Image 1 (cartoon, one colour):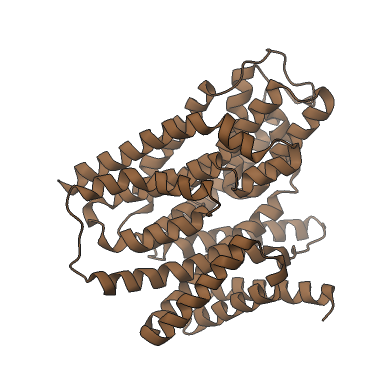
Image 2 (cartoon, rainbow, N blue to C red):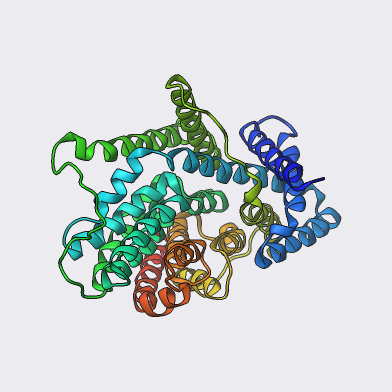
Length: 446
């Protein structure tokens, strides 16, 4: 099989898994989707990073153990793998479609205007806003703008502060975004937790995190960026791109909460269907406008398939094994739950510092702690998980966004994590851990 044919086959298998995830309510379709995911991963083995290969090996090992010890758990694990794989593929489809929008260029140019403090907050909050539908595409767009500024004026405090804003803005997204894999995975492994309850706490936490970031930046001169193109200074033309993007995000969120709350669908499935619906509407609109409609190749998604799909498969089996080994009546001492909630963000962050993806850490954390956590205090665990996820994404050198920013701007991911963000990360870990521990303490009644 030549290279082109192989890539086409891998992409076809990924799209097949996406279809299976959408139809996973049908009997047996979840298992079929998992088989397609495994096949796509195996065909893309040469493109997998070391961490992905290790994770896939762990998945295969756990699969073998479950086949011998608890085969009845495999269908649920396969269905979970299919659902979350469909989620990440749909989000990437949405990102690809919106990434070519002319509105995106106008929004990103506006973010680099103004005084130093206003520019930093514009970049940070703007990246967080764009990352809801664009995922890593938001980092790519903003980093390209920073690269243009560097080409015009060279390395400066302005470009370094903008880079800080991009990392922190993207890091805020896992804390608050209803469409993020972090909130979906947290709700999946802590099913007693309601999405609106979690977001009601995590959204203010994310806002505070971004506001505090203004204290952790370099002094710079007040001249506006020379790379900013002329934009309308006032009126609807200036805000129209923002309104259009906001309407897309708002429609997806409304559809998600409606499917989840009114129709009783799982949160992961609700997000998938909402994003997929937005993709279909966008493709239909392009078709009506006479533009070329072409789906992107999913062949480069091998690592994402392992990390997201493999973690979902692994997490479901870990939850099953933990419940069996620990027993249904197992519980920690009352004082241990607030301590554990305080520690969870640190576990995420320390794992990220040695290369563990937050999805893997979240899977292990949710799979082990979710079944034994006091039902009345699940908000504390959920807050700890999404806060740790976001801080790890923004402040560790092996996160995908840090590596992407490094590739596009040349700023070292190690320097960004250890010099630019470490003090802020430690302060925010203390605050978020204390918040999660306090919520757990109050709600558990200990």
